[in-house]
Every structure is written in structure tokens, then in C-alpha cells.
Amino acid sequence: MRSIHHRGVVALIGVALLGLTACGQSAADGAGAGDTLVFAAVPSEESTSLQQSFEPIISMLEQETGTTIEFQNATDYAAVVEGMRAGQIDMAMYGPFSYVLAKEQDPDISAVAAVIDEQGGEPGYVSYGITRPDTGITDLAGFAGRTVCFVDPNSTSGYLYPTAGLMEAGVDVRNGLNPVFAGGHDASALAVAGGQCDAGFAFDAIVDSQLIGSGQLQPGQLQTVWRSETIAGSPIALASGMAPELRDRIGRALVERGNVDRLTADGFCASAEDCEVGEAGSWGYAPVDDTLYDGVRRVCDVTRAESCTSLG
Image 1 (tube, rainbow, N blue to C red):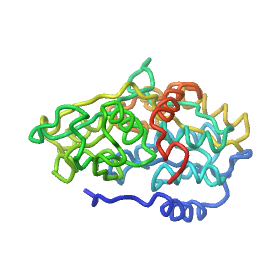
Image 2: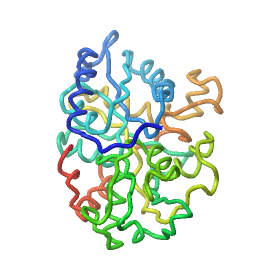
Image 3: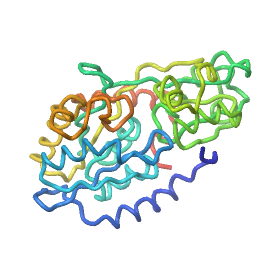
């Protein structure tokens, strides 16, 4: 597990953009054969295989658009927001909160599809407040005065919704606890399990299945003492400078072909069992529009979190 630290988000933006600038010119303004589109994503867990998870989707989109798609494993959401605003990123897998921030800075970017866990499902997930059974913490009020792991200042389920929940529970988020930014949902959960934090936050699948499936957590090692309302699913958004016909083609392809069944049938996955669609446990994508993320905006209004108006 990576070391736990308080993060300098603004400093990391510059580092990430240096890497993105080296990628070359994007093709957002009218892709054709031989052009390159840049696709960026941020890992939700400590993983070196994020690019591999997106390979079936990227291969399908390359066939659909006739372009080369270059994948960027971004440092954090702030880097993705700034990279798209600066014209260095054409497509991005955002968290709901980081998408709202990006939309505020550039109203012409478009959320076109969000991940779903099963065919016909709705795009959404839940944030968990977690602790160890031996802490005696039974609810969010018990987080007061404790060392609490968050994920990232720009994380929807790892910071924004938890902040709203803590405020509703009467906890002074600014002065009433010791916050630690772990950098990933898995890192937050593992820090709680390992005793570096008394309590923390992570999204549901990390706690319920992913870390247990990988053997990093044992059943019952963590207990969930709080669940958020359903949070709008993580969207793929397209840059404002992208040609409208290309934007439509990508959005349609994600919804119609970006799922386990079609990717397997079209030869982008060897089998449905081994087919990855960007995020562990996802089946495919459903169409979305900007209004789906109004719930995130409401939570920003409630919390007045600094990160709701700032990248760092």
C-alpha cells in the first residue's frame, strides 16, 4: 500500500500536464484516419492495470472512429479537469464531482455515458463510512476527534458526500477531526483496516467485493456505519472542441457497443468472464445527460466545500 499523505493537488496538476503535453496534439477538432485522441482516467484503486481495463473499450472506439486512442493514467482528477480544459485531453472517465467541476470551467464539455453494473441497470453507486469493529464507532458522529481517511479533495464518494454526511451528523469537518487524504479508495479502506486511520470512506464495491476478492481484506475486517444516498455514476465526458459528429459517434458506440456482451461478440474480449469495461464489475455504459449530476451540485451547496469552487 502506498504511504498515506496530505496531497498538494495543485502541484500535481503541473506534473501531470507535463506528461500529457508530451503526448502530442489531440484530434478533438475533427478526427480522421491517422489522428490521435487522448483518453484519460484516474484509478479508483492502487493498480497498474488501469490501461488494461480500458483496452476493450479503446479498441472498439478506435475501430468505430478510425483514430488512434492514446490512454493516459492521470495523477488525480484535478489533472484531468485541467488537462481537458487546456486541450490536452479529448475523452475522460470522470468521477461525478470532478465532472461537475470540469463542466463549471468549460460548459461545452459533454457527459455521454456512465458505467452500469448490469444490463438495464441505472448508473449509480454508494459511498460507505467505514471503521474497524474494535474502535467502538457506530455512526458518523463517532468520527469526531478521530483520524479519518478521505480519498481525494475532488472525489465524489471519497470526500464530497462524506463531508455532507459528517456535517449532518454534527461533526465539525474543518476542526473536529484529523483528516488524511489516502489518494485512492483502496488505500483509504486499507489504511482503516491497518490502523493508520480510525475511520474512513470508500465507495461500496471496493469494500464489499474488490478488496475481499483480491485477498487484501478479510470479511468482517471492516464494518460499514454509514451509507450515502445513491450517487450518479461516473461519466465519460468529451471535450468541448470535439466535432459534433465525432462526439455523437463516440457516445452512441459506448452505449450500443461498450458492454461485455457486444465487446465479446465483436472479438474485443476473449470471453465474457474475462471482459473488463473500464471499472471492475461493470457490464457496460448507459446514456446520461448533465441533469443527472444535479445531486452533486446540491451537495456542494450544502457543504460549501472549498473544492466545489477550486481545483486545489
